[in-house]
Image (cartoon, rainbow, N blue to C red; front, top):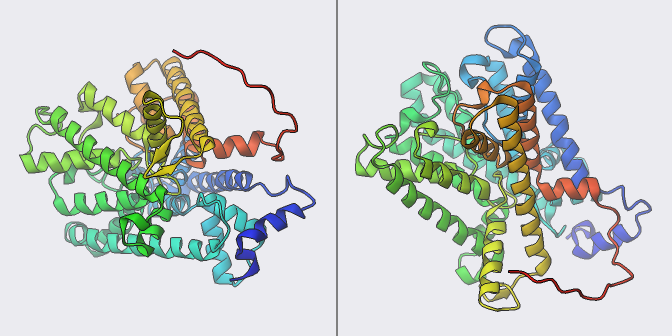
Length: 463
């Protein structure tokens, strides 16, 4: 093992760094995403990016570039009907960069050019993958890239079985690759608008192949790279880390619970699942529960769902996927820790434990901070959309939750919004992708130092 990969080396390097504020991985990630978004918006603004050969309004280019880079899927124009092949290729590249992460893409360039990866870059890579230890971070990053390309390749091959006979060889291959990358990266962009705009995958609601492949890709992308690394190296449940086990259990509960709820709530709705067989309803319910995990694809009309289903969808979107994945939301681990903390309090226990392991109180505080900030951000966004465009609160809330959680599900509200609302949703998507804590630490934090004075304990009554 190289000395740069040794865990203790990180502390030695940091201790001797003359500029402790110079190494800010959070700021690098934040500015990196911003740079990619600006570049993508500029490319989409070029006349060659639009089918009409004319320039697309800059705010729409910025919105699309942000949605693609932040792997959201909200669209102000139909991806197939408006953008040319060049524009679609730009969007695909932005999705892939956003899914892998800025530092993983930078590392890929370093691998090809045989350039030595510096200590600062290792810190940035670890922050990008939500890893606290530098040991083996370069090897892990290589594994993430290879794993992503392999899964997306297999997904494209399987989707081509359906798309090539339907669209022809080259167009079928293009659609297969685009949708495979979009699904694994939890982006939700589609190229199915040939006959009607914004239809997404509604034409495949009864197709088990397309549904199955997309569901698997979404789940794999939403579990997180560290979870898959753990699963590939450990094959017994007790050998898995607490993080992996918590992610798997929470994901299973959300998928199973969401599927059952959607099946019960939408089975009699003639505008969504009412005309399907029992098996097809089960498949459509599972797809809806899966896509709400910040994927953005849809096989049923989101605007036609019952009010109860809309609430369930927003809850699943708000929770999102898992840390270190291509998904957004407050993350499954944050939601699980908040529930575990509540259960611990109700049982009168001092410690919060799961799988016979005690959770660090600071980790729980981080989860509560993320949840509180997300609630405030969604509330403010809903209020602004209602104020700027006069839309109904329920529709504004759905669109805002979708933007913050980088889900991309829409009730066809986004294309009708004004410039001010679009700009706010752009900010929501950006904050949702880079993470509220990453943004807060990058902007507000100073050099980490233990306080020299610890104040006496104060007591406050709750409840």
